[in-house]
Amino acid sequence: MTKTATLTFSDGTPPIELPILEGTYGKPVIDLKALAAHGYFTHDPGFTATSSCNSAITYIDGEEGLLYYRGYPIEELAYKSDHMEVSYLLLHGELPTAEQKTAFVNSIRHHTLLHDQMENVFRGFRRSAHPMAVMIGVTGAMSAFYHEGTDLFDPKHREIVAHRLLAKIPTVAAWAYKFNEGQPFVYPNNRLSYAENFMHMMFSTPCEPYEPNPVLARALDRIFLLHADHEQNASTSTVRLSGSSGANPYACVAAGMASLWGPLHGGANEAVLKMLDEMGDVSRIPEYIARAKDKSSGFRLMGFGHRVYRNMDPRARIIRQTAHEVLEALDLKDNPTFRMAMELERIALEDEYFVSRKLYPNVDFYSGIIFRAMGIPTSMFTVLFALARTAGWVAQWNEMLSDPAHKIGRPRQRYIGHARREYVPIEARRA
Image (spheres, rainbow, N blue to C red):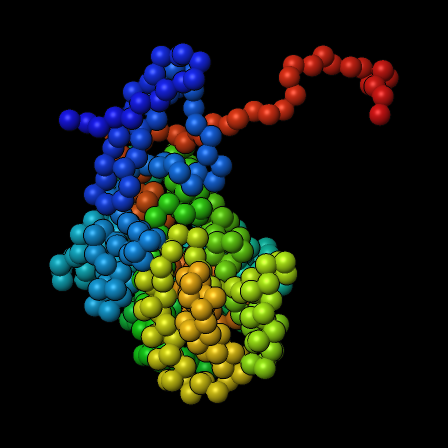
Protein backbone atom coordinates (compact mmCIF):
# COMPACT_ATOMS: atom_id res chain seq x y z
CA MET A 1 0.00 0.00 0.00
CA THR A 2 1.38 3.40 -1.01
CA LYS A 3 1.89 5.76 1.91
CA THR A 4 0.44 9.24 1.52
CA ALA A 5 0.88 12.67 3.03
CA THR A 6 -2.09 14.95 3.54
CA LEU A 7 -1.78 18.66 2.79
CA THR A 8 -4.33 20.60 4.83
CA PHE A 9 -5.31 24.26 4.57
CA SER A 10 -6.20 26.73 7.30
CA ASP A 11 -9.01 28.31 5.25
CA GLY A 12 -11.11 25.19 4.94
CA THR A 13 -9.98 24.27 1.41
CA PRO A 14 -10.32 20.50 0.96
CA PRO A 15 -7.11 18.60 1.82
CA ILE A 16 -4.90 17.09 -0.89
CA GLU A 17 -3.53 13.56 -0.70
CA LEU A 18 0.05 13.21 -2.00
CA PRO A 19 1.87 9.88 -2.54
CA ILE A 20 5.07 9.18 -0.58
CA LEU A 21 7.71 7.40 -2.66
CA GLU A 22 10.56 5.30 -1.27
CA GLY A 23 13.98 4.87 -2.89
CA THR A 24 16.57 2.15 -2.34
CA TYR A 25 18.27 4.41 0.22
CA GLY A 26 17.70 7.90 1.49
CA LYS A 27 14.74 9.83 2.81
CA PRO A 28 11.25 9.25 1.35
CA VAL A 29 10.01 11.85 -1.12
CA ILE A 30 6.55 13.38 -1.42
CA ASP A 31 5.29 13.27 -5.01
CA LEU A 32 4.02 16.80 -5.66
CA LYS A 33 2.85 16.41 -9.26
CA ALA A 34 -0.80 16.36 -8.14
CA LEU A 35 -0.50 19.90 -6.73
CA ALA A 36 -0.63 21.44 -10.21
CA ALA A 37 -4.11 20.03 -10.81
CA HIS A 38 -5.25 21.85 -7.66
CA GLY A 39 -3.65 25.15 -8.68
CA TYR A 40 -0.59 24.99 -6.43
CA PHE A 41 3.15 24.44 -6.80
CA THR A 42 6.04 24.51 -4.34
CA HIS A 43 8.70 27.14 -3.70
CA ASP A 44 12.20 25.77 -3.05
CA PRO A 45 15.10 28.14 -3.90
CA GLY A 46 18.22 26.15 -4.72
CA PHE A 47 16.11 22.97 -4.98
CA THR A 48 17.55 21.86 -1.63
CA ALA A 49 14.40 19.88 -0.75
CA THR A 50 13.35 18.86 -4.26
CA SER A 51 13.98 15.61 -6.13
CA SER A 52 14.16 16.46 -9.83
CA CYS A 53 14.45 12.95 -11.25
CA ASN A 54 14.70 9.22 -10.63
CA SER A 55 18.29 8.01 -10.90
CA ALA A 56 20.06 4.69 -10.36
CA ILE A 57 23.59 6.03 -10.83
CA THR A 58 24.96 7.59 -7.64
CA TYR A 59 23.88 7.68 -4.00
CA ILE A 60 25.20 10.02 -1.30
CA ASP A 61 24.47 9.93 2.43
CA GLY A 62 25.98 13.14 3.75
CA GLU A 63 25.29 12.33 7.40
CA GLU A 64 27.07 8.98 7.28
CA GLY A 65 29.74 10.03 4.76
CA LEU A 66 28.75 7.45 2.11
CA LEU A 67 29.16 7.59 -1.66
CA TYR A 68 28.07 4.71 -3.91
CA TYR A 69 28.41 4.38 -7.68
CA ARG A 70 25.71 1.99 -8.92
CA GLY A 71 25.64 0.45 -5.42
CA TYR A 72 29.42 0.02 -5.08
CA PRO A 73 31.11 1.92 -2.20
CA ILE A 74 33.56 4.49 -3.52
CA GLU A 75 36.31 3.05 -1.30
CA GLU A 76 36.16 -0.35 -3.03
CA LEU A 77 36.20 1.18 -6.49
CA ALA A 78 39.04 3.60 -5.67
CA TYR A 79 41.37 0.86 -4.45
CA LYS A 80 40.33 -2.04 -6.70
CA SER A 81 39.16 -0.45 -9.96
CA ASP A 82 40.22 2.29 -12.40
CA HIS A 83 38.59 5.21 -14.16
CA MET A 84 37.82 3.36 -17.39
CA GLU A 85 36.09 0.52 -15.57
CA VAL A 86 34.11 2.98 -13.44
CA SER A 87 33.13 4.97 -16.54
CA TYR A 88 31.71 1.76 -18.01
CA LEU A 89 29.92 1.06 -14.73
CA LEU A 90 28.32 4.51 -14.61
CA LEU A 91 27.22 4.31 -18.24
CA HIS A 92 26.00 0.71 -18.36
CA GLY A 93 24.99 -0.02 -14.75
CA GLU A 94 27.21 -3.05 -14.23
CA LEU A 95 30.94 -3.70 -13.98
CA PRO A 96 32.31 -5.01 -17.28
CA THR A 97 33.65 -8.47 -17.93
CA ALA A 98 37.27 -8.64 -19.12
CA GLU A 99 36.08 -8.79 -22.74
CA GLN A 100 33.65 -5.91 -22.28
CA LYS A 101 36.30 -3.72 -20.67
CA THR A 102 38.79 -4.43 -23.45
CA ALA A 103 36.20 -3.54 -26.09
CA PHE A 104 35.22 -0.38 -24.18
CA VAL A 105 38.81 0.82 -23.74
CA ASN A 106 39.56 0.12 -27.42
CA SER A 107 36.49 2.12 -28.45
CA ILE A 108 37.59 5.08 -26.31
CA ARG A 109 41.07 4.92 -27.86
CA HIS A 110 39.51 4.88 -31.32
CA HIS A 111 37.90 8.28 -30.65
CA THR A 112 40.74 10.23 -28.97
CA LEU A 113 41.70 12.31 -32.03
CA LEU A 114 40.00 15.64 -32.64
CA HIS A 115 38.85 16.67 -36.10
CA ASP A 116 41.74 18.43 -37.84
CA GLN A 117 39.72 21.63 -38.32
CA MET A 118 39.20 21.91 -34.57
CA GLU A 119 42.73 23.27 -34.30
CA ASN A 120 41.28 26.42 -35.88
CA VAL A 121 38.73 26.65 -33.06
CA PHE A 122 41.56 26.79 -30.50
CA ARG A 123 43.38 29.44 -32.52
CA GLY A 124 40.34 31.69 -32.35
CA PHE A 125 41.01 32.32 -28.65
CA ARG A 126 43.50 34.72 -27.11
CA ARG A 127 46.61 32.93 -25.85
CA SER A 128 45.91 34.37 -22.40
CA ALA A 129 42.37 32.96 -22.27
CA HIS A 130 41.58 30.89 -19.20
CA PRO A 131 41.85 27.19 -20.13
CA MET A 132 38.34 26.62 -18.80
CA ALA A 133 36.95 29.22 -21.23
CA VAL A 134 38.74 27.40 -24.06
CA MET A 135 37.46 24.05 -22.79
CA ILE A 136 33.85 25.24 -22.78
CA GLY A 137 34.14 26.86 -26.20
CA VAL A 138 35.83 23.93 -27.92
CA THR A 139 33.51 21.35 -26.36
CA GLY A 140 30.51 23.37 -27.49
CA ALA A 141 32.06 23.64 -30.96
CA MET A 142 32.13 19.83 -31.18
CA SER A 143 28.38 20.10 -31.80
CA ALA A 144 29.24 21.66 -35.17
CA PHE A 145 31.34 18.62 -36.08
CA TYR A 146 29.10 15.87 -34.68
CA HIS A 147 25.53 16.99 -35.16
CA GLU A 148 24.07 15.20 -38.17
CA GLY A 149 23.03 11.56 -37.98
CA THR A 150 22.56 11.43 -34.21
CA ASP A 151 19.25 10.03 -33.01
CA LEU A 152 19.14 10.82 -29.29
CA PHE A 153 16.49 8.17 -28.71
CA ASP A 154 18.61 5.41 -30.26
CA PRO A 155 20.69 3.76 -27.47
CA LYS A 156 23.49 2.88 -29.91
CA HIS A 157 23.78 6.48 -31.08
CA ARG A 158 23.90 7.69 -27.47
CA GLU A 159 26.66 5.17 -26.74
CA ILE A 160 28.75 6.56 -29.61
CA VAL A 161 28.25 10.09 -28.26
CA ALA A 162 29.29 8.97 -24.77
CA HIS A 163 32.44 7.26 -26.10
CA ARG A 164 33.39 10.30 -28.18
CA LEU A 165 33.06 12.63 -25.20
CA LEU A 166 35.00 10.36 -22.85
CA ALA A 167 37.75 9.99 -25.46
CA LYS A 168 38.03 13.54 -26.77
CA ILE A 169 37.66 15.63 -23.62
CA PRO A 170 41.18 14.72 -22.35
CA THR A 171 42.56 15.85 -25.73
CA VAL A 172 40.59 19.11 -25.51
CA ALA A 173 41.81 19.64 -21.94
CA ALA A 174 45.48 19.01 -22.75
CA TRP A 175 45.32 21.19 -25.85
CA ALA A 176 43.71 24.03 -23.85
CA TYR A 177 46.84 23.95 -21.68
CA LYS A 178 49.22 23.73 -24.65
CA PHE A 179 47.50 26.65 -26.37
CA ASN A 180 47.73 28.74 -23.20
CA GLU A 181 51.43 27.93 -22.88
CA GLY A 182 52.21 28.62 -26.54
CA GLN A 183 53.40 25.06 -27.09
CA PRO A 184 52.55 22.81 -30.07
CA PHE A 185 49.65 20.41 -29.66
CA VAL A 186 50.62 16.83 -28.83
CA TYR A 187 48.53 14.07 -30.35
CA PRO A 188 47.19 11.15 -28.30
CA ASN A 189 49.30 8.02 -27.85
CA ASN A 190 46.76 5.23 -27.69
CA ARG A 191 49.22 2.71 -26.27
CA LEU A 192 48.99 4.55 -22.96
CA SER A 193 46.31 4.33 -20.30
CA TYR A 194 43.63 7.01 -19.99
CA ALA A 195 45.51 9.02 -17.33
CA GLU A 196 48.93 8.41 -18.89
CA ASN A 197 47.68 9.58 -22.27
CA PHE A 198 46.44 12.83 -20.77
CA MET A 199 49.78 13.38 -19.02
CA HIS A 200 51.57 12.63 -22.30
CA MET A 201 49.50 15.19 -24.22
CA MET A 202 49.92 17.80 -21.50
CA PHE A 203 53.59 17.47 -20.60
CA SER A 204 55.49 16.11 -23.61
CA THR A 205 56.86 18.27 -26.42
CA PRO A 206 58.41 17.40 -29.80
CA CYS A 207 61.85 17.89 -28.27
CA GLU A 208 61.19 16.31 -24.85
CA PRO A 209 59.14 13.10 -24.76
CA TYR A 210 57.38 12.55 -21.47
CA GLU A 211 57.46 9.28 -19.54
CA PRO A 212 54.52 9.23 -17.11
CA ASN A 213 55.51 8.46 -13.52
CA PRO A 214 53.38 5.41 -12.52
CA VAL A 215 52.70 6.83 -9.04
CA LEU A 216 51.44 10.09 -10.54
CA ALA A 217 49.46 8.30 -13.24
CA ARG A 218 47.70 6.18 -10.64
CA ALA A 219 47.02 9.26 -8.49
CA LEU A 220 45.51 11.08 -11.46
CA ASP A 221 43.40 8.08 -12.43
CA ARG A 222 42.13 7.88 -8.87
CA ILE A 223 41.21 11.57 -8.89
CA PHE A 224 39.29 11.05 -12.13
CA LEU A 225 37.47 8.09 -10.56
CA LEU A 226 36.59 9.97 -7.36
CA HIS A 227 35.20 12.94 -9.30
CA ALA A 228 33.36 10.93 -11.95
CA ASP A 229 29.86 11.58 -10.56
CA HIS A 230 28.23 13.14 -7.51
CA GLU A 231 24.46 12.97 -7.77
CA GLN A 232 22.39 15.98 -8.93
CA ASN A 233 24.88 18.78 -8.31
CA ALA A 234 24.72 22.11 -10.18
CA SER A 235 26.69 21.01 -13.26
CA THR A 236 24.98 17.62 -13.58
CA SER A 237 21.58 19.27 -13.21
CA THR A 238 22.63 21.73 -15.92
CA VAL A 239 23.51 18.89 -18.29
CA ARG A 240 20.19 17.20 -17.57
CA LEU A 241 18.17 20.40 -17.97
CA SER A 242 19.92 21.28 -21.23
CA GLY A 243 19.55 17.73 -22.51
CA SER A 244 15.87 17.56 -21.57
CA SER A 245 15.08 19.77 -24.57
CA GLY A 246 16.80 17.37 -26.96
CA ALA A 247 19.76 19.73 -27.40
CA ASN A 248 23.01 18.56 -28.97
CA PRO A 249 24.84 16.51 -26.28
CA TYR A 250 28.18 18.25 -26.83
CA ALA A 251 26.50 21.59 -26.18
CA CYS A 252 24.86 20.10 -23.08
CA VAL A 253 28.22 19.00 -21.67
CA ALA A 254 29.67 22.44 -22.48
CA ALA A 255 26.81 23.95 -20.46
CA GLY A 256 27.69 21.62 -17.58
CA MET A 257 31.30 22.80 -17.78
CA ALA A 258 30.16 26.43 -17.57
CA SER A 259 28.25 25.61 -14.39
CA LEU A 260 31.20 23.69 -12.97
CA TRP A 261 33.53 26.67 -13.50
CA GLY A 262 31.98 28.61 -10.62
CA PRO A 263 34.13 28.99 -7.47
CA LEU A 264 31.32 27.48 -5.36
CA HIS A 265 31.44 24.29 -7.44
CA GLY A 266 34.43 23.10 -9.47
CA GLY A 267 36.64 26.08 -8.71
CA ALA A 268 37.06 25.16 -5.04
CA ASN A 269 40.43 23.39 -5.39
CA GLU A 270 41.77 26.39 -7.28
CA ALA A 271 40.68 28.57 -4.35
CA VAL A 272 42.61 26.33 -1.93
CA LEU A 273 45.91 26.96 -3.69
CA LYS A 274 45.21 30.68 -3.98
CA MET A 275 44.66 30.75 -0.22
CA LEU A 276 47.93 28.91 0.43
CA ASP A 277 49.78 31.27 -1.91
CA GLU A 278 48.29 34.21 -0.04
CA MET A 279 49.44 32.76 3.31
CA GLY A 280 52.96 32.47 2.00
CA ASP A 281 54.49 30.73 5.03
CA VAL A 282 53.58 28.23 7.73
CA SER A 283 54.20 30.92 10.38
CA ARG A 284 51.05 32.76 9.25
CA ILE A 285 48.73 29.80 9.79
CA PRO A 286 47.69 30.84 13.36
CA GLU A 287 46.59 34.21 11.95
CA TYR A 288 44.38 32.53 9.34
CA ILE A 289 43.00 30.03 11.85
CA ALA A 290 42.03 32.93 14.14
CA ARG A 291 40.29 34.70 11.25
CA ALA A 292 38.40 31.51 10.38
CA LYS A 293 37.14 31.21 13.98
CA ASP A 294 36.07 34.88 14.09
CA LYS A 295 32.51 35.00 12.71
CA SER A 296 32.73 38.75 12.18
CA SER A 297 35.75 38.46 9.86
CA GLY A 298 33.79 37.04 6.93
CA PHE A 299 36.76 34.79 6.17
CA ARG A 300 36.61 31.03 5.77
CA LEU A 301 39.30 28.48 5.08
CA MET A 302 38.96 27.05 1.60
CA GLY A 303 38.93 23.26 1.25
CA PHE A 304 37.26 22.49 4.59
CA GLY A 305 33.74 21.19 5.08
CA HIS A 306 31.23 20.29 2.37
CA ARG A 307 27.66 21.32 1.55
CA VAL A 308 26.44 17.71 1.36
CA TYR A 309 28.72 15.80 3.74
CA ARG A 310 28.16 16.36 7.46
CA ASN A 311 30.79 13.73 8.14
CA MET A 312 34.18 13.43 6.45
CA ASP A 313 33.87 13.30 2.68
CA PRO A 314 34.64 9.62 1.85
CA ARG A 315 36.59 10.78 -1.20
CA ALA A 316 38.79 12.92 1.05
CA ARG A 317 39.89 9.91 3.11
CA ILE A 318 41.05 8.17 -0.07
CA ILE A 319 42.66 11.15 -1.74
CA ARG A 320 44.44 12.13 1.51
CA GLN A 321 46.45 8.92 1.28
CA THR A 322 47.06 9.56 -2.43
CA ALA A 323 48.32 13.08 -1.68
CA HIS A 324 50.85 11.74 0.79
CA GLU A 325 51.97 9.10 -1.72
CA VAL A 326 52.53 11.78 -4.38
CA LEU A 327 54.44 14.11 -2.03
CA GLU A 328 56.61 11.17 -0.96
CA ALA A 329 57.29 10.05 -4.54
CA LEU A 330 58.30 13.57 -5.58
CA ASP A 331 60.23 14.29 -2.37
CA LEU A 332 58.13 17.41 -1.71
CA LYS A 333 57.35 16.98 1.98
CA ASP A 334 59.48 20.02 2.83
CA ASN A 335 58.13 22.29 0.09
CA PRO A 336 56.76 25.48 1.81
CA THR A 337 53.32 25.25 0.15
CA PHE A 338 52.90 21.60 1.07
CA ARG A 339 54.17 22.16 4.60
CA MET A 340 51.41 24.77 5.03
CA ALA A 341 48.85 22.34 3.64
CA MET A 342 49.92 19.52 5.95
CA GLU A 343 49.89 21.82 8.98
CA LEU A 344 46.38 23.03 8.11
CA GLU A 345 45.33 19.40 7.74
CA ARG A 346 46.75 18.54 11.18
CA ILE A 347 44.94 21.45 12.85
CA ALA A 348 41.62 20.68 11.16
CA LEU A 349 41.78 17.05 12.31
CA GLU A 350 42.77 17.91 15.90
CA ASP A 351 41.41 21.37 16.80
CA GLU A 352 38.11 21.15 18.74
CA TYR A 353 36.63 24.08 16.77
CA PHE A 354 36.95 22.24 13.46
CA VAL A 355 36.26 18.74 14.79
CA SER A 356 33.05 19.77 16.61
CA ARG A 357 31.76 21.50 13.48
CA LYS A 358 32.93 18.61 11.27
CA LEU A 359 34.97 20.99 9.13
CA TYR A 360 37.20 18.24 7.80
CA PRO A 361 39.56 18.72 4.85
CA ASN A 362 37.55 17.89 1.73
CA VAL A 363 38.42 16.37 -1.63
CA ASP A 364 39.19 19.81 -3.13
CA PHE A 365 41.82 20.45 -0.47
CA TYR A 366 43.77 17.34 -1.41
CA SER A 367 43.23 17.38 -5.18
CA GLY A 368 44.66 20.90 -5.37
CA ILE A 369 47.75 19.78 -3.47
CA ILE A 370 48.23 16.81 -5.81
CA PHE A 371 47.80 18.90 -8.96
CA ARG A 372 50.32 21.50 -7.73
CA ALA A 373 52.81 18.75 -6.87
CA MET A 374 52.44 17.27 -10.36
CA GLY A 375 53.26 20.61 -11.97
CA ILE A 376 49.71 21.32 -13.14
CA PRO A 377 49.01 25.08 -13.02
CA THR A 378 46.14 26.38 -10.91
CA SER A 379 44.21 27.54 -13.98
CA MET A 380 43.93 23.89 -15.10
CA PHE A 381 42.41 22.53 -11.88
CA THR A 382 38.77 22.99 -12.91
CA VAL A 383 39.60 21.69 -16.38
CA LEU A 384 40.71 18.39 -14.84
CA PHE A 385 37.55 18.32 -12.73
CA ALA A 386 35.50 18.70 -15.93
CA LEU A 387 37.50 15.93 -17.59
CA ALA A 388 36.73 13.58 -14.70
CA ARG A 389 33.06 14.56 -14.38
CA THR A 390 32.42 13.90 -18.09
CA ALA A 391 31.86 10.23 -17.24
CA GLY A 392 29.03 11.14 -14.88
CA TRP A 393 27.56 13.75 -17.20
CA VAL A 394 27.22 11.35 -20.11
CA ALA A 395 25.81 8.64 -17.83
CA GLN A 396 23.23 11.04 -16.38
CA TRP A 397 22.34 12.39 -19.84
CA ASN A 398 21.94 8.86 -21.18
CA GLU A 399 19.80 7.80 -18.20
CA MET A 400 17.53 10.83 -18.60
CA LEU A 401 16.87 10.14 -22.29
CA SER A 402 16.28 6.45 -21.53
CA ASP A 403 13.56 7.29 -19.00
CA PRO A 404 10.03 6.77 -20.41
CA ALA A 405 8.86 9.58 -18.11
CA HIS A 406 11.40 12.00 -19.64
CA LYS A 407 10.08 15.49 -20.32
CA ILE A 408 11.60 18.93 -20.85
CA GLY A 409 12.64 20.63 -17.60
CA ARG A 410 10.51 23.64 -16.72
CA PRO A 411 10.92 24.94 -13.13
CA ARG A 412 8.19 27.26 -11.85
CA GLN A 413 8.63 30.60 -10.11
CA ARG A 414 6.93 32.72 -7.48
CA TYR A 415 6.30 36.06 -9.17
CA ILE A 416 6.89 39.05 -6.86
CA GLY A 417 7.03 41.87 -9.44
CA HIS A 418 4.58 44.68 -10.21
CA ALA A 419 0.89 44.06 -10.68
CA ARG A 420 -0.56 45.01 -14.09
CA ARG A 421 0.36 48.58 -15.13
CA GLU A 422 -0.57 50.87 -18.00
CA TYR A 423 2.03 52.07 -20.50
CA VAL A 424 3.05 55.74 -20.04
CA PRO A 425 4.35 57.66 -23.13
CA ILE A 426 7.95 58.80 -22.70
CA GLU A 427 7.10 62.51 -22.75
CA ALA A 428 4.73 62.01 -19.81
CA ARG A 429 7.15 60.06 -17.59
CA ARG A 430 8.67 61.61 -14.48
CA ALA A 431 11.88 60.48 -12.76
